[in-house]
Image (spheres, rainbow, N blue to C red):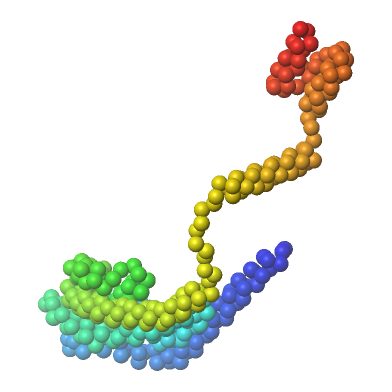
Length: 361
């Protein structure tokens, strides 16, 4: 294996080792947090189920329809809560792995966005718990048909609230996505603002897909998405304005340097002489000089060609034929010409025939 391939493999292996170490640290932290939360799994579930328990009719309670649900449901909730609370550390490990490959201006932009994304996700989950859950569960229990007892399964309820947590946490990332689109130059705040009607319709469509099939949760997700989109457009305008100001300052800082460089170049550059046409004699001398240089180059090229390229044997025989003709040895010349007719190419054969005709004449 060559040294170049070894140099390429070593950084690649070092990146893999670093990725492995960071993944192991992340898994270890999640495991530690999970072990700390698991003894309180039932208490955490009671906290999560409180919005529904408050609005359930008297004499009703949640139930477990599966044998292992009383154990697996708190276990699952504790594991997801461990990942949820470990998210800052997980993103820190991700940042530590990615940051060395970023430019300085990218780091200045990415780090605030990364921190803001964590905060916004937590805000989305809090909005779902404190605002959406009470309204949705109150609506569900109020429309229960007469004679039907509301007894929600604990595992079904957990899946329901986790879906809403994820949907609202993801929806609250819209400002980050908007700023990233503007930062990468894929769009502008003005174009985003002009697409507002489509964004509103898209927000309700996404709300329909990410939330359970009810109008309240869909609307409660779509409206914050719209508001967050408007917030993202506003912040992206500030971002574009700041970037233009920085670009203007850098241009202003470059102008004196460029002016100094131009002045220095103009001061140090030699002054060109005024153009003067050549006289007739000078023109002839210049042409003779150029012609002599061309002749020398052609002669040297022929010499190099003669030295490097050996003469073709058939051509050598034709040259020998001319020498024999000059020496009046026509019989020997004829023998060589017959050999040329057998060995030569089309041009050489034609030349040999012409010489034979001349000898016959």
